[in-house]
Length: 233
Image 1: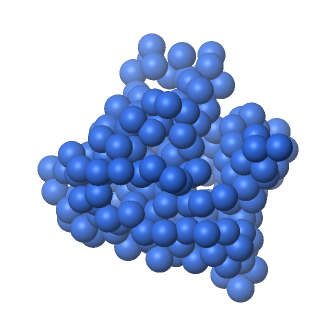
Image 2: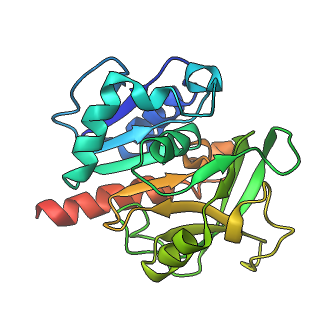
Image 3: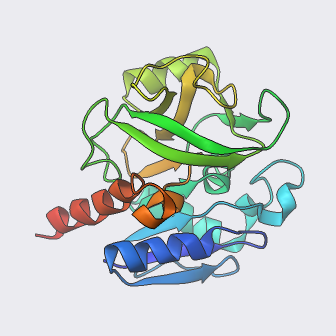
């Protein structure tokens, strides 16, 4: 299985994502420069965290117009697997591949801390090895991670099982205290209706090995590989 990691000016988690794929999954992976006009030959595209174009205007707003994004949009619309992490999630929202928008954190400060996520949807390629209600410990690091959508969109997200992760406490209870940024409905990650595009604010690549203090994030990468292996059999 071949992974591609998009690199925008300002990306700072691209090397972490590449390492997670290479070291944890032992799968081939390459960087894809933002000026590339093709993502052909890749089985999964990762949009990493960082501050693409310095987060000017809005986080992800300029990166959305990078040449590579037209190829990513076409790739996703044809069923290709796309994972957007933190700034990558913001880019997917700006590109219209996922519904909703990101606002500044409620406290108007940058947040960098461990969070607990409740797995709400195990039917995506990214969560196939998870269990319903499973709690994952995964860190966040963002200033604009306050996910927002209108009531109509939220209702659709719930009806279509598009809410993949919600912030919770260590026991899996979804509470206001467990919500680090004010995201509506404690949303930490969502997918599109077909389940092939996932955006999440927490960083699984930062906790994919025990040496990092937790390996909970590895389940996402392993799920992608397991899902792909089942699909190609």
